[in-house]
Length: 91
Length: 97
Image (cartoon, rainbow over all chains, first blue to last red; front, side, top):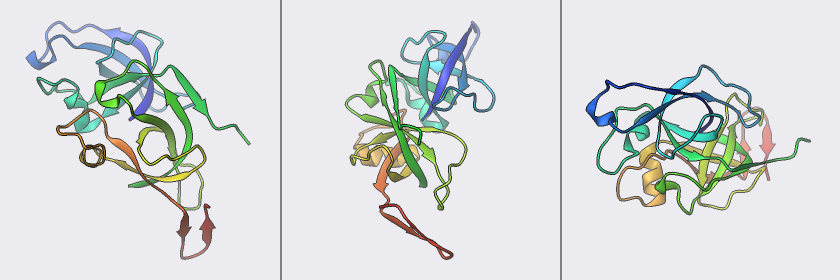
């Protein structure tokens, strides 16, 4: 799992039937200090996040297992909202 | 598995049910000599690792499933599987105690 920041919403009406009901967000992978890591991507949301939220997301095969009743054809799925980050103090 | 250093912890209330009652840590991949590699990862801790510890992180869903004793596949893949006491390299010894 990795950290990400929600930067926008994507609307797609016509999509694979297994994706019905899913919301898509533009998500920028970031490090613990908020710096961007690589390019932004589109992720499926499972927790009701909003733009500007700091979240963690899962990629790879595990991104497809977010729902109990079906597997979704997603390669990045948002699985949690970060309330607080406690970081090691800089030396 | 990869070597990582625990750099922080995450407090999270709203999350997927597979993360319920789990300790969520922030880890950064490191080289065997202790220098940081690029990237930051979120990993589940089951063995009481603390901030500053060098740990082994398995980043594969099947291993996570075995460790967390899930009965089915869940959207969770990175788990801290061990705390590193010491790394012996051919050229030098790096003590992480």
